[in-house]
Length: 134
Image 1 (cartoon, rainbow, N blue to C red):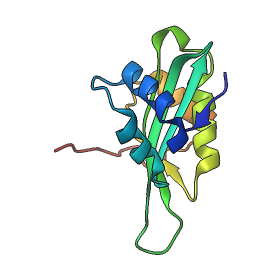
Image 2: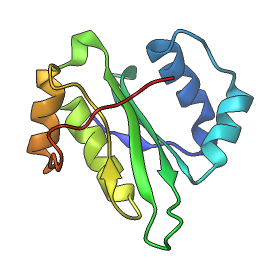
Image 3: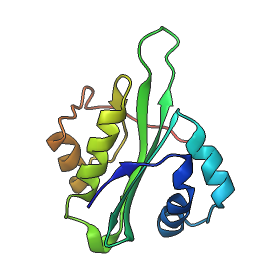
Image 4: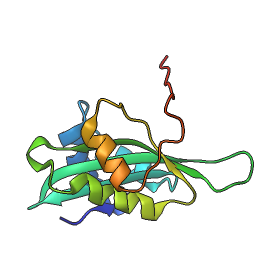
Protein backbone atom coordinates (compact mmCIF):
# COMPACT_ATOMS: atom_id res chain seq x y z
CA UNK A 1 0.00 0.00 0.00
CA UNK A 2 1.44 3.31 -1.06
CA UNK A 3 -0.91 6.28 -0.60
CA UNK A 4 0.03 9.47 -2.37
CA UNK A 5 -1.26 12.91 -3.14
CA UNK A 6 -2.15 13.21 -6.79
CA UNK A 7 -1.10 16.04 -9.07
CA UNK A 8 -2.04 17.02 -12.63
CA UNK A 9 0.26 14.34 -14.10
CA UNK A 10 -1.81 11.73 -12.22
CA UNK A 11 -5.10 12.54 -13.97
CA UNK A 12 -5.34 9.00 -15.40
CA UNK A 13 -5.05 7.48 -11.93
CA UNK A 14 -7.63 9.99 -10.68
CA UNK A 15 -10.08 8.84 -13.37
CA UNK A 16 -9.87 5.29 -12.00
CA UNK A 17 -10.36 6.49 -8.42
CA UNK A 18 -13.39 8.60 -9.33
CA UNK A 19 -14.90 5.75 -11.35
CA UNK A 20 -14.52 3.47 -8.33
CA UNK A 21 -15.84 5.77 -5.60
CA UNK A 22 -18.24 8.22 -7.25
CA UNK A 23 -21.55 7.77 -9.03
CA UNK A 24 -20.59 10.15 -11.84
CA UNK A 25 -17.42 9.51 -13.88
CA UNK A 26 -15.01 12.36 -14.58
CA UNK A 27 -12.86 12.95 -17.62
CA UNK A 28 -9.10 13.10 -17.56
CA UNK A 29 -8.98 16.75 -18.67
CA UNK A 30 -11.37 17.93 -15.98
CA UNK A 31 -9.50 15.98 -13.31
CA UNK A 32 -6.15 17.34 -14.53
CA UNK A 33 -7.54 20.88 -14.07
CA UNK A 34 -8.98 19.98 -10.64
CA UNK A 35 -5.66 18.51 -9.52
CA UNK A 36 -3.71 21.54 -10.80
CA UNK A 37 -5.30 23.71 -8.11
CA UNK A 38 -2.97 23.65 -5.06
CA UNK A 39 -5.97 24.33 -2.81
CA UNK A 40 -7.47 20.95 -3.71
CA UNK A 41 -6.21 17.66 -2.31
CA UNK A 42 -6.79 14.17 -3.68
CA UNK A 43 -5.00 11.24 -2.12
CA UNK A 44 -5.32 7.73 -3.48
CA UNK A 45 -4.23 4.34 -2.29
CA UNK A 46 -4.00 1.17 -4.35
CA UNK A 47 -3.66 -2.53 -3.55
CA UNK A 48 -2.15 -4.59 -6.36
CA UNK A 49 -2.89 -1.77 -8.86
CA UNK A 50 -6.56 -1.74 -7.83
CA UNK A 51 -8.01 1.50 -6.42
CA UNK A 52 -8.51 0.82 -2.72
CA UNK A 53 -9.28 4.26 -1.32
CA UNK A 54 -9.63 7.96 -1.93
CA UNK A 55 -9.43 11.03 0.27
CA UNK A 56 -10.20 14.49 -1.00
CA UNK A 57 -10.44 17.90 0.52
CA UNK A 58 -9.87 21.60 0.17
CA UNK A 59 -7.58 24.17 1.70
CA UNK A 60 -9.71 27.01 3.02
CA UNK A 61 -8.06 30.41 3.24
CA UNK A 62 -8.62 32.24 6.50
CA UNK A 63 -9.51 35.94 6.39
CA UNK A 64 -7.52 36.64 9.58
CA UNK A 65 -4.13 35.81 8.10
CA UNK A 66 -3.67 32.56 10.04
CA UNK A 67 -2.57 29.50 8.05
CA UNK A 68 -5.09 27.86 5.76
CA UNK A 69 -7.23 25.05 7.11
CA UNK A 70 -7.53 21.73 5.29
CA UNK A 71 -11.10 20.49 5.18
CA UNK A 72 -11.01 16.73 4.61
CA UNK A 73 -14.29 16.39 2.79
CA UNK A 74 -14.41 12.65 2.25
CA UNK A 75 -12.49 9.45 2.93
CA UNK A 76 -13.70 6.30 1.18
CA UNK A 77 -12.24 2.80 1.17
CA UNK A 78 -13.54 -0.05 -0.98
CA UNK A 79 -15.29 -2.67 1.14
CA UNK A 80 -12.79 -5.44 0.39
CA UNK A 81 -9.88 -3.24 1.57
CA UNK A 82 -11.37 -1.98 4.82
CA UNK A 83 -9.67 -2.65 8.16
CA UNK A 84 -6.26 -2.87 6.42
CA UNK A 85 -4.95 0.62 7.20
CA UNK A 86 -5.92 2.37 3.94
CA UNK A 87 -7.83 5.22 5.57
CA UNK A 88 -5.16 5.65 8.24
CA UNK A 89 -2.44 5.85 5.57
CA UNK A 90 -4.35 8.40 3.47
CA UNK A 91 -5.11 10.52 6.53
CA UNK A 92 -1.41 10.52 7.43
CA UNK A 93 -0.58 11.89 3.95
CA UNK A 94 -3.28 14.56 4.34
CA UNK A 95 -1.94 15.58 7.76
CA UNK A 96 1.55 15.91 6.31
CA UNK A 97 0.24 18.12 3.46
CA UNK A 98 -1.45 20.64 5.72
CA UNK A 99 -0.57 24.29 5.87
CA UNK A 100 -2.40 24.87 9.15
CA UNK A 101 -5.08 22.96 10.97
CA UNK A 102 -7.07 20.05 9.54
CA UNK A 103 -10.75 19.50 10.24
CA UNK A 104 -13.52 17.21 9.13
CA UNK A 105 -17.04 16.18 9.97
CA UNK A 106 -18.32 12.71 10.71
CA UNK A 107 -21.22 11.05 12.48
CA UNK A 108 -20.89 9.86 16.04
CA UNK A 109 -22.61 6.66 14.92
CA UNK A 110 -19.72 5.96 12.49
CA UNK A 111 -17.65 3.98 14.99
CA UNK A 112 -14.87 3.17 12.51
CA UNK A 113 -14.37 6.84 11.59
CA UNK A 114 -14.53 7.96 15.23
CA UNK A 115 -11.84 5.42 16.16
CA UNK A 116 -9.67 6.36 13.16
CA UNK A 117 -9.74 10.08 13.93
CA UNK A 118 -9.07 9.59 17.64
CA UNK A 119 -6.18 7.22 16.87
CA UNK A 120 -4.72 9.80 14.47
CA UNK A 121 -4.69 12.39 17.26
CA UNK A 122 -7.86 14.23 16.38
CA UNK A 123 -9.76 15.97 19.14
CA UNK A 124 -13.42 16.77 19.45
CA UNK A 125 -13.46 20.32 20.82
CA UNK A 126 -17.27 20.69 20.93
CA UNK A 127 -19.32 17.59 21.74
CA UNK A 128 -22.51 19.35 20.66
CA UNK A 129 -21.52 20.40 17.11
CA UNK A 130 -24.39 20.34 14.64
CA UNK A 131 -24.23 20.50 10.86
CA UNK A 132 -27.02 22.01 8.77
CA UNK A 133 -27.37 21.19 5.11
CA UNK A 134 -29.23 23.28 2.53
